[in-house]
Amino acid sequence: MPPLSAKPAPKTAPKSAPKSAAGSLAGFCPWAGEEGVRVYLRPVGLMPIAAWAKGAAVPLAGGRFAFSTAELIVRDRSARIDRAFAPLSEIMAWGWERSRAVAEALDRQLGALTRARAPFAGLALDRPLIMGIVNVTPDSFSDGGDFLDPAAAIAHGEAMLAAGADILDIGGESTRPGAAPVPPEEEERRVLPVIRHFAAKGAAVSVDTRHASVMESAAAAGARIVNDIAGLSDPNALPVVSRSGTPVVVMHMQGEPGTMQANPTYRDAALDVFDWLEERIARCVAAGVPAERITVDPGIGFGKRTEHNLEILRHTALYHALGCAVLIGLSRKGFIGRLSREEPPKERLAGSLAAGLETLNQGAQILRVHDVAETAQARALWEGLHPR
Picture (spheres, rainbow, N blue to C red):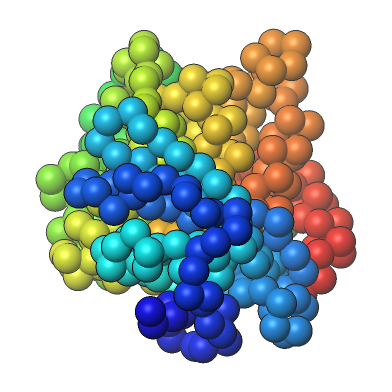
């Protein structure tokens, strides 16, 4: 059978696949070739990128890590899920033994996993980026009211830039659990003066909004990124993003802020989020928004229980198979307190850093945070420990 290799560069995948998947995958998941079955690759056992140069592994998304082993996950439309860990060469050979469709799906994912990421909104992804949160709101869960006044928001953003923020994410609507929606006109009144100030300085500004009209106004005011917690669910959002050429962060949320924590349920949280994001990316690409202009965010805390959040974070590396940059926003989230001593939001820095660094160890490219100076210091140590 012909071997599979990731595209486009031969060096980014095993040089050949064995003719048999005997070994750790012998007899694994005999039903994988059935109609409707999906397969997933999650890189594990990440190694320094030097392992790629030595031919012992393949690169992970052009970052600091390489891998030669993955978790192979198979599931169907019912409740069946099978998992196995194996070398990439065995996994690719196993795919050919099951069916051409399975083999081609694995090949596409391996290509996406190994492909270097293009700059996002003009920002190189050769080091983790820090997105600083500027909430121009009276009721955000962590700092509601602290920066509602535009002058206070601008001063806060200036301090974040000085502390090491690469992007400022400016939002005018609280999306905490139970939050009431804000009219787009009020949202614009809050965020546009702040966006204009930082855009005039040349800062990379993101607008945190789920309303297409706000996206359009913010882009006109100089915002370089749209960060949409609703995954472009506003019917006009995708046309706005496509027409304006604005890079976009597409986030997963189950439900909407007012009710999202009432009873979130998943068959498998990490895989369900993957499938949803994959479908959204396909819609974006079909509408003229290429993958290099998309960053994905699995939406920690948005329609997810503590166990869902943890499962998704453990599977951060899985989301590189979508072929886009990966953003993680977990700063000060409630699950940190629930796992600890129920600390209030502003006392969850240590947990935020611990979880954020764990996602960097799985190749995440962007961290969205409240505490920029502390995150920048942690990133500096992380970079020292993981040289390119």
